[in-house]
Length: 61
Image (cartoon, rainbow, N blue to C red; front, side, top):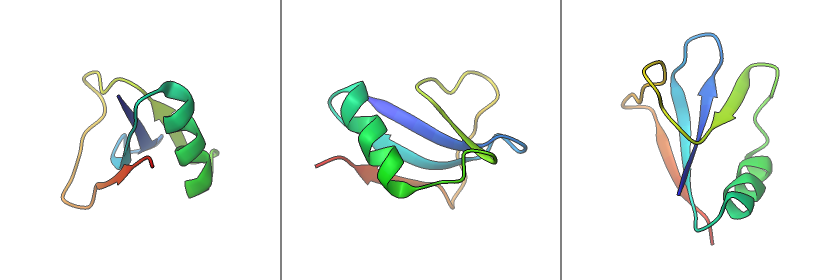
């Protein structure tokens, strides 16, 4: 499962959190402490979200 943390203004994916469950992914995303006024989470990319060479991947433990 993948959770995308993305910039709400540019739709650029900053981090892809990979884990087994929603709870695991969300716990890891909370640990990363992104400003939720600027960033949002999604489980789908849709047509708006995109990765760049700066996109990081984080595995849940």
